[in-house]
Length: 225
Length: 201
Image 1 (cartoon, one colour):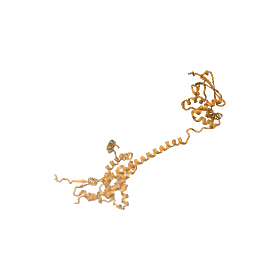
Image 2: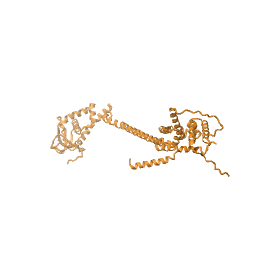
Image 3: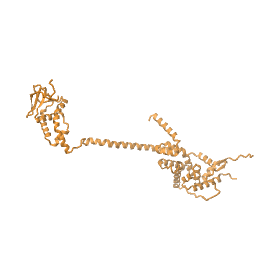
Image 4: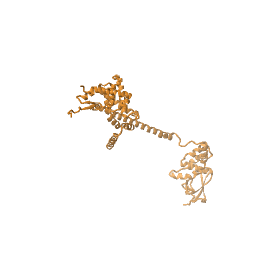
């Protein structure tokens, strides 16, 4: 038996591994590369933030601004054709008698404003005449505009005057010229009376009201107080 | 940012890194492309940076190796989509990029010249994949280091890559030569190392 131990050997791979183990890659490489990623992230974030802000800005510009312009510059109502205009004019006529009914209600809303119709009546009568005899434009204005209640009342009364149809009213306060019609609408006329009960109010040629006692209309449900 | 949200972020990153360590190189790169999370690259660097640096150091000096290793990783960050899983493993691709970068620098600085090798058939040459063993002796490691550095560039490159664990085909892909050429270089490298490191009678 041999006393010699076989000589120790080292493989090529082991020698290479030892060499590699003795050399460390500088940590600066990793630090710089990772720092680059973070910088890139920040740049990307900044880019995305800018992009998001730009998109929001554009959306606001697209949505909000045109609406703002429309409010200021564009009419909310589309322009009418001539046929529609004429139709509107035709419809405007019956509205006058409707306004006659609604006028007292409008007046009730402003009880403090003691309105004297006599001053405006003549001018308003002329206006109403213009509207009813139709030149297209003024009639359109009448149809589209929301006229103040006082004007409507005056128009209504003047329209009633033009038809010369007397109003049958119930005297509420003769000294104040306050009456009620069959629809229980309060009407004030520029006239004083001592009459009580039902009266027939007629507008004369000189635009003054004349009152005469009359019977309660058959179709009227209102009772005297 | 509140203290609580900082702690949550720290915990989330820790969890994410722990699970990322289970991923393959290719999965890590794909995850990085998807999320741009530094921890994926950090793991890849932990796995391969030392080997890459050592490979580059074997072919150049410390400063150049450091610069090139850094450039290689930065190039990867610039355009990670360039990696094609079908063509090569991540590690092979990384070393290819590193080698090409090194060659560019060496060519620019005129520090690299092709050394022609006598690559004729020689029956005395060891096999290209022989596991050589050397008798332990004084300064063996130091002599190995010197012998490796003394090898012609092409042989040194081939044997370093082989000792890094690359297959013949992978080395051929990194260097851009035919496998037969690589095989020849490996045999000559082995022969040279054997001559340098075997004890003389």
